[in-house]
Length: 314
Image 1 (tube, rainbow, N blue to C red):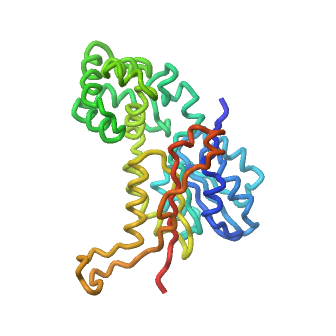
Image 2: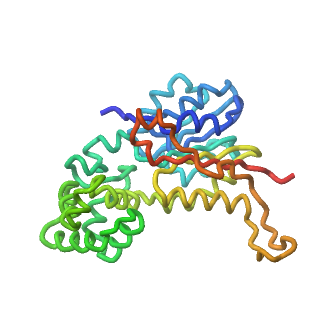
Image 3: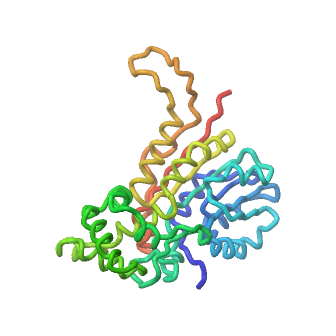
């Protein structure tokens, strides 16, 4: 199965990156190279592009799709949380732009064997990096009930998290929960009729929560945000596309903190904490997909793009 993914907010991201032909740009979630190819088209022979992804299927596909730009492209299998080390290995300390698309790719959702989708029956997996040891099956069958509840409640914002966690633990005592449909069935039985027959799939929020835990998505984002800002040259930009409220809130707060890091009480006449602004938030409100994009790609519905520009104090 080919790695397919429709790049979300493509034109908007490329516009906001303000690409310099001789610049250095990083895509920390390379995927199918949709954003990457548009960046590479705008680079001169002196420009450089670094693509990072933890999914080997994405690496293979992106390498093929960016073949025409191979003189200026370097692709590395890693997680963007290790971006500073990846760049150091390439002899790079600062870059002119960084982008992240934090969504799950269409390929990962539609490829049944990856276990991301609640719409097809498959082994419980959900690993973006298939070389890592922990997968969704270990989480579902191994975590204590209280931890499952916390994950489903916090990461999935699921109203019926307590009931779902309890029933998972009841069922796994009878037999190991192996497949996506086994989990979907437990989720359905944990909800009142009105909830499971309402708008949207009843398993969506729980699957999102387990996927986030499996791949440490919020933990990785939290660790990486400030460091990515620090990797930017003066006037370099960080563009991040999020798909749910927890990610978006984290990005919004990190951008604000980097713009205004002062910790002095509001009534202080002058700043004495010594914290210096690292730049400017470009998007006071997130950039959302246009109606035309939503008509062609419904999966873009929850996408939000936020942009930060580095400003180096002189």
